[in-house]
Length: 85
Image (cartoon, rainbow, N blue to C red; front, side):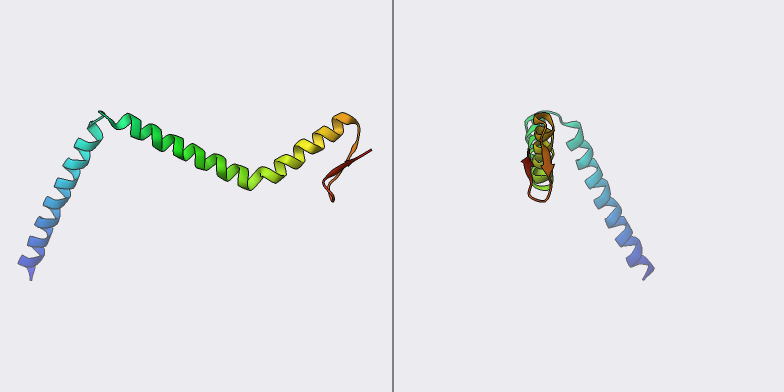
């Protein structure tokens, strides 16, 4: 039983060292990765913008209308989301 555990540890250790060496070589390579990184970055920014608009769009629209009403000297009615003179 102990021999089996030792063999399993040796196999696991060698597998982990191979994964570590492949990861190290992957992280050292910078050739060609820049375009992929830019695409991922642009994608994440697009998702963030879409989520922000979906979550805060109506609230921001009402805030801008409220400022517009204040500039015009009118009163903002939050219940109907309209300006009144």
